[in-house]
Length: 285
Image (cartoon, helix red, strand yellow):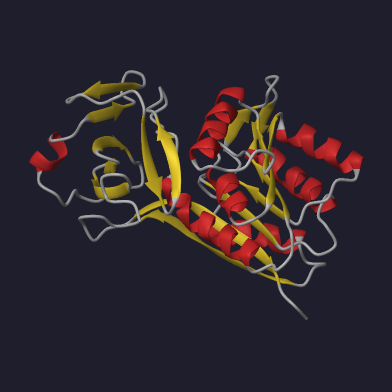
């Protein structure tokens, strides 16, 4: 198990901010959901390496020396961490719940699985699936992000060929896979509220998520093992996502579940809501 200095920990939250330990460095970032008061004393918040602000434009300010890149480990998966102009770090720790769910489904399938990961970001779910034994296709519209995901896969010693890397617009890729007759046993997707494809295609979750789910339905194998759907879009509650999966998978034997993703409590007793999770898994009659 990684030590706290190597891993991620939420230290505190409140007044629209979150204080995080990311490996051996601490960062203070915006958190709109944290409408409550901070718990830790002010000196704890001031004794941090970097602060990200969106006031007057996105910017980092540094209070202590911090490298441009370092490595952490969360639940057995290693990541390169590098603060971006958008305030991201290269991993979303709230998704550790999803990674475990995916690992459990693959391990419990007792058969080889082909898994498709869409809007894959820096590769955490792809790596979790590959480590559990699945053959993974990783799709993201950003070549830069896919390059980072490949580096993360190498960092975790994922064998070559275990993950297939695709830089493409998700909808275009799904349509091509449907025409090719490709089939997958598991699908993971974490659509953004808004985004752009590899050639500038505009993605809006309200417009395109129903289409994506229909396209995914077309490329499922006869006995799909699982679907995982997560997002951070206000209004797309766990029940909303669960209902979407219920309709999509009603012709298969399975069960759905949903919950809120959280950054678990650290030095305080207050977890932070950080997105929404829904999943469907195969069950026997």
